[in-house]
Length: 24
Image 1 (tube, rainbow, N blue to C red):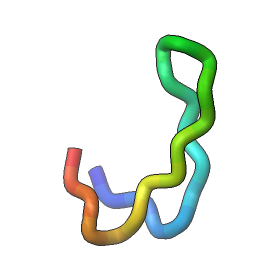
Image 2 (image 1 turned 180 degrees about the vertical axis):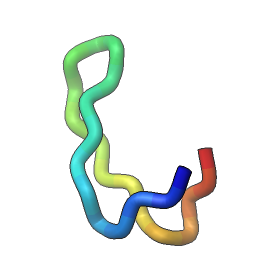
Image 3 (image 1 turned 135 degrees about the vertical axis):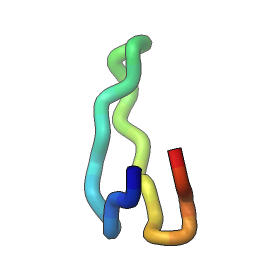
Image 4 (image 1 turned 45 degrees about the vertical axis):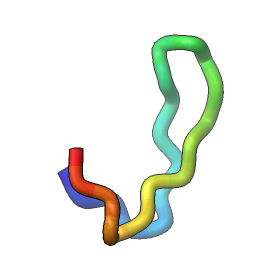
């Protein structure tokens, strides 16, 4: 899943910024 500079919440409740170069 590609996210362009968007904030995603993890299971731990922390916010991580996923760049376009990150594929999950």
